[in-house]
Image (cartoon, rainbow, N blue to C red; front, top):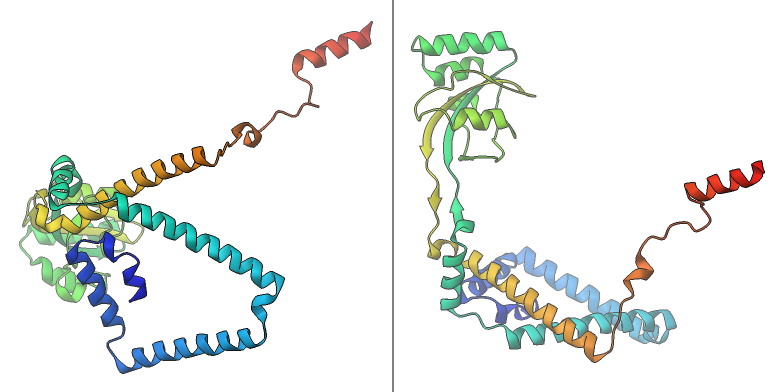
Length: 277
């Protein structure tokens, strides 16, 4: 509860409820609750022993506690500033989405199958048999070296997006180019070579690029807008505090200096000329 309460005020209702459900799920079983109790008891018992031994009075412990206090109070000061200055309304979210809707586009996707073989000759042989009308699924079961898909007729799980990882194939510009230049229901004209071998790829389905709706991406929009407002508030607060406490950073102290002992070319030539006189 304490973990969630730190951020609850900054979350929209649906995200707050999701976080709460996830936290409750972590402790849904008796074993998980027992582990949480044991962890709490271990910490409490060690804490009591430390108090009895007066460990908090040791100089090294006091130094650590001062550092922790400094960090906690600094965090609380920032949290208070954010809570006071940031108020996000449903209208703010809609306005941000409208201005940044290109950030919430689902790229073109495809569903594919593939047959993986170990050499180009075999790959071209499989392609020839496909052109003669043999079923892709049957040839996948007979020839494919991809154990994860061969028994399922070569079907690759999920969907493929441009530039994304392709299960059974990996990251491959050539495979991506072949997939998105092949019509749905067709087989790519040429095998694609990767470090796994040669892939014969069938595109089962093509799905065009799609604009995600505001309702779909509302939590993402909230996080993006929240992050932007946090940066603005943090920068403004730190600028104010630097001025209030007269903080000046001399950046020149951190720049690399040329070794003053190292003479430049002109000095070297002048010295050589002097020696020659």
